[in-house]
Length: 136
Image (cartoon, rainbow, N blue to C red; front, side):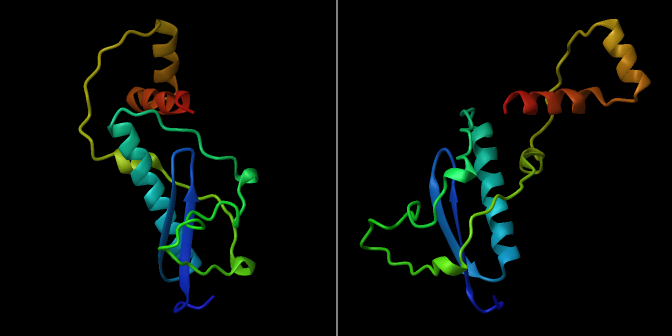
């Protein structure tokens, strides 16, 4: 694919199907998809909404999941032979990082404190990671 060809990405998650398009490379399309996903998930978290589980990639189909197939007002021509389904990576923390920290006081067992200090753990970061992991 050359830089001048149209690049499109479709995203299908547990909550919505979206179509984005622009001129650029596959890499730029994947970067746009990652940014869109990061902003969307961060918005869910900021709004206190439950982040839905993503759609299993093995259930997706380029033709069946085309979001505008029944909308006569939108005509998009896809070359399905040059299209593909893929996952994108997003670090949601980078989209949430601009939030001010909130001070919390908590109590942990002495053994956990000792072990954390022994391994030079950042307790705030460890708690943040554990909370994100629990949301999965």
